[in-house]
Length: 507
Image (cartoon, rainbow, N blue to C red; front, side):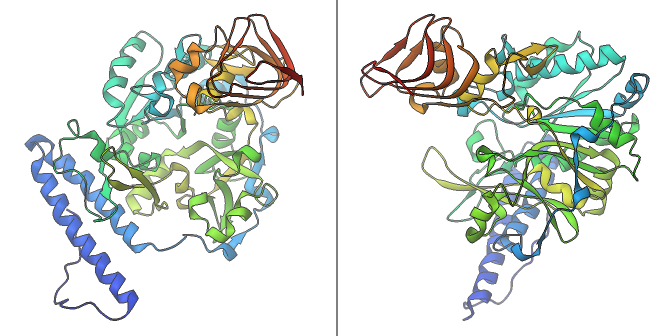
């Protein structure tokens, strides 16, 4: 196991507060290590080795958590982004068609598939929620890659990073893709014990994750690098001649393979190939909390709101100061991943996630973000991509948009309808009490309204929509407590406010 510094002879608490904190931290390390050793002993004999390996990694993360104090960024050291740090997507060259196959055979598509659909009221992996034409996130991803492989006679594999929450269900689901022209690999990210906020000791008392899943957690997508290496899959992909992986969230429907970006990576005319590329897009008021790209200590790196000193949070949210935000669409060189892991130079900021379990126990989860690894690589680059490459589905309001006639679907790819006059998507707010769960949301629409000319929609309270409704401009529908509003089939609402007593007013 991970070696913990053993303390001797501390009979009394030192008077200085810094010394006090040092002693309590080292005591916490020692006590945690004792509990982790006990956990390993509870594992089945055939699983003890892997359990020990994971808990060793966790102990290292916990050690860093104890040592790090305050924000990890000195605000005064943030430098202005150099002009060449972010390439405009429109300046990228389109590769010739006869090079496509050769390029694609050097690519791996990685989808981060560790999340559950609980925030939208669904059970099982989020990736199996039907988002369009009864097709799930996973279905659309597989369709896209099969289309690429068929079109260019290539062999781009799909890699799914599952968690202990999603692996079993995902394994059953991917069997249906066996007849398709897509190789699918899976590996699991780490499984770490949740920690009691009060005692800083592990919540679980045994390594039987299946019988007590609430005591364990997957430590964020920053765990990708170590987990793909320890699974053996990184070595396998390198032995196949793969050079780059394209990493994205499974619920981002805009994160598709882009041949112009791949061409830049493999055929960079202005120097050595970049080891790490982050797709960024212009920040809007809806994205002010999203991570951004900065230059810091001569390196490009990701800055998340959790790293920002409290007195600088408003500066961080400024659209003028920080123009871009991270889409979490990332391109990384596989041999560079292998190198930084071998060197031990991979360094990602720790995100401390506070939660309360069902028994009201306050816990902390130590996580890392996949984009935070950027500063560990050489030749990094941001690419300012169109907003269409960031189409996440986090809430039913996002689902409302992607299920509507705002988008057309072709070969698994969603694209905005040519009939939409504006390039921006409407702002949609659906009330949490009646629309937050997918099943409730679907029950309230006979079908999704025509929103090609919609700018803003707010719906609150007990509201239902008939078939063939059209919404234009700004529409606000509010049913007060105890009231119900049924929008009739065929209704046209343009710049209207509909209130609880069904008065329809010009907006």
